[in-house]
Length: 255
Image (cartoon, rainbow, N blue to C red):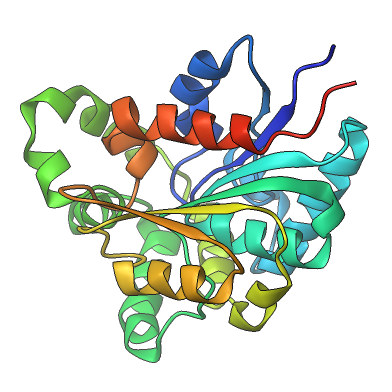
C-alpha cells in the first residue's frame, strides 16, 4: 500500500531544506514532498513582479493534482501558511489534514508595512547584509533560540543561508508583505487543523494564531513557550513528533 503523502510549504527567507529533519523522521510512514515557491530559490530570477499568495496557491493545487495521491496532508510555515489556508479553503477535497506553523491569515498591518517596505527596498539594493541580516534573523528565530548554545549550529546554518539569498528575492518578499487577508476563507476549511504558535514569534504573533483557531472549524491550538517564528527548526524534538502523530491520526485510508 502507498504511503500517505504530505506536502510541506516553506517559509519566506527559508526554503524546502527546512523540512529535511521532518522528512527523515517521516520516512517509512509518509511520502514527503517539499516544493519551492515561485520567485524563490532556483527560480528567484524568473519573476519580475511581486508573487501573490493566490498565484502560489494555484501552483500548489496543480502540484497536488499532479501527484495523483488523493488528499494530502499540508504542513506549512509562515508564508507557506498563507498559501495553505487558501488551498484548504478553496479546494477542500485536496487536503486531508492541515498543520499551520507560525502562520496567520491576516493581511500585514499598516504599521508593519511602513517598517517593512524600506527594508525590502534595501534588500533589493544590497541583499542580506549587516543590520538587514540581523533583523531578518530576529524575525525568523526567537530570542531564546538565538541565545541557546544547543541551537547555535541551527542558527548559524540559517544565518549563512539567509546571507546568501539574492537581492532578487524582493519580488517574493513584496508578494508576502502586500498579501490580501484570507480571514474570510477560514470558515470554509474542512480539514482537521493543528495550529502551532511560539510565544516569541514576532512575525506572526500568538494572537494571529488564536484567530486561526477561532475561525477554522474544530481547529486545535498548540502554544509553545520559549520558541519564535520557525517552530519546526527551533524545537524539532517536540514539534516533529506531534505533527507526525496528528497527520497519522487524520491520514486518508490507504488503498
